Amino acid sequence: MTLFGLDGLELALVVTAFAASGIVRGFGGGIGANFLTAPVLAALIGPREAVPIVLLLNMVGNAQLMPDILPHVRWREGWSLFLFPVFTVPVGAWLLFTVDEDVMRRAIAAAAFGFSLLLLSGWRYRGRHLTALSIVTGSVSGVLVGSISLGGPPVFLYLLARSGDAATNRAQFVMFGAIVGIVALGLFIAAGAIALDTLLFAVFLLIPAAVGIWLGSILFRRASEEAFRRICLWGLVAVSLCVLVF
Image (cartoon, rainbow, N blue to C red; front, side, top):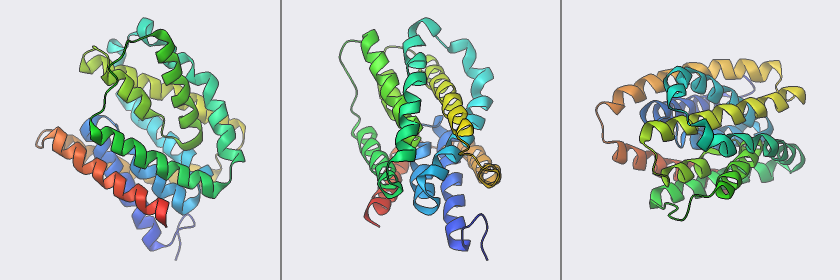
């Protein structure tokens, strides 16, 4: 018996990935959450179907956070980070639909693997904060969102290197994701890349993701954030490596 074109084991893997992603999102605000879902979905249903689903679920999460983060958004500082991805997301979407699917599947896994190791290393940018750097960061992230749905890490690392407080950095990160996600989804809808079965699958996956977010929120009050994040990132390294190898 199959559901959404997946057999029982494959569906269980996807549900587990989205539940785990929800836990990461509920615990730490979403950094690294896509690393679990994107490689698994890309491996099982293909990157061209996986990326829109991941983006759809991200938009739901971002919408939930909007009332909380809007008072903390600094538009004058973030305009270059928010604006320029609008122009580069189409480049990423073009890559997604022109490059061989197996190549894109492995590219998603490789990006998740590399970014996980980078976050685990604790590396931070320590140079000057120039508008040009913000433009480059946002533009590169836009390409990554449109092509493999993993545009968050460059923005996350850039914001961590700034002197802003945690609430402001979180708000800037969520607003970047919301804006670039709307643009990417608009492109996929215009291209007819989001079919009815894709939308239904995304709605189905909202259930394990929501349960995971609830559990992550509970864990946030009981566990060490640093220990939890490192466990999650090492798990992401293992998942990405499996997708790369097999």
